[in-house]
Amino acid sequence: MNPILRRNLLRIPAGAFVAVGLLSGCGSSLTSEAVDLAGLSDRTLTLSQSDVDIFEGVDEPGAHRVTVTFSQAVEGDRCTELREGVTATFNGQPMALERGGVDGTAGRDVCVPTRAYYDFDPNVWVREPMEDARIVLQDGTHTITLVMKNGKAKRLFSFQGPGAEDRLTRGQEYSFRWLPEGEVPSRAAATLLREGGSATATIPTEQEEAVVRFTLLPTTPVAAHLLTLSATAPGEVLECTGVATCEATVFHSEERVVNVQ
Image (cartoon, rainbow, N blue to C red):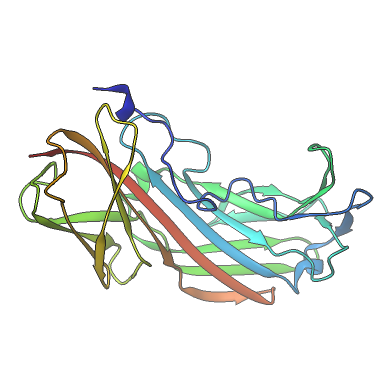
């Protein structure tokens, strides 16, 4: 297969990955203010799930990750760093915790938010039943809980037809359904990259609830292509305690090789 189809990183919209998380620049004299977990009780806690499936290759760090990030302090001159002793879990499993604070390695002080993340195995999740995602952070002073409906579930685009999903005909309409059922993503995107080519072509899409449709243009070259589907869906927060507010979103994209005829 042409190496162009063996990419290790999907081109996705900026911000879809939550692995970096530098939120705001600060003055050069900024210092970290150590706080207990209770000191973050006035913040917004945002859950972001990244579920990026590539056709072939090794996943980039953060490709399949659930991250919760605390908003910055309202006062622009404050940069808080969580004290040691806090634990974070995803459905009882330990999460990696980054305490935040001032980072001056880039030549100027940057205020890094407090966050925790959990890397999941998509091959395991796709075989297991859906569950709500329960994230708990706690120390000796405070407990924070965020529960997202069906947060432990593999997202998919299920081919609805017509014909075979690996052979597409020019001028034919095709449809894919976002799964799990009950979620409705925002406007989905579809692109094609021809084998041996270097330019990605955007396919106009239509959407009805969770079903995405597109018609393969008659001018599409007859060849093997890499089809990429992507969308973001809002997450339903079932429980939010210990912070001011909670939010949740899920980003999913997947690549598949199709033969255009």
